[in-house]
Every structure is written in structure tokens, then in C-alpha cells.
Amino acid sequence: MVMPAHNEATLLDTSVREVVDGLRVRDVSFEVLVIENGSQDDTRALAGSLAEAIPEVSVRHLPRADYGRALRTGLLHAAGD
Image (cartoon, rainbow, N blue to C red; front, top):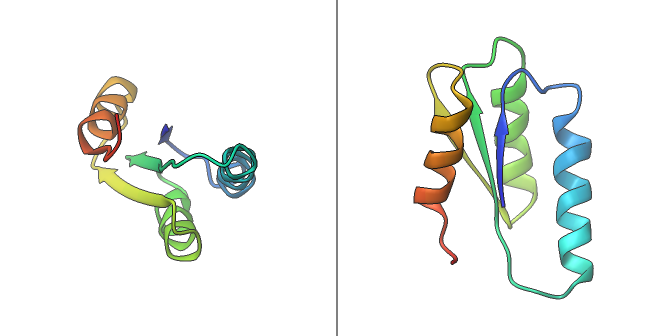
């Protein structure tokens, strides 16, 4: 799953954990790629903390806000189909 994140510090922790918990219940292999793109808040640091705490989560960073580029980056870096 690709999750673009731009200035999402207030929602990111809850959103990522809910997605991970929901996918774990389905007992399928998955990954969650958070693509932080140009945030001006603590989104980048929070995404890094989530990636350290949750094995299925990884993070990529883009220097500026660009939703389309964030989606493309996530799709290109996804390990699964």
C-alpha cells in the first residue's frame, strides 16, 4: 500500500497503525510505503519512527509536495505486485 503524506503529522500515526492492523488481520503479506513529500511539520520524523517500530512500514522522502510523484515513487519502490 502506498500512502502519500504531506503535512500529516496529526493523522499519520493513527492512519498507518489502523491500516497495518487491518492488513494483519487478513493474514496476507503486505507492505506500507509512506511517501513523505515536502512536509513543513513533523511528518518526516514521525514517518521514520513508524518505520522503525513497524516492520511492514518503510518510508521514502521527496523534497517537495507532489501527490502524483509520491504515488509513482511508492509504486516504483514497492517490493510486491
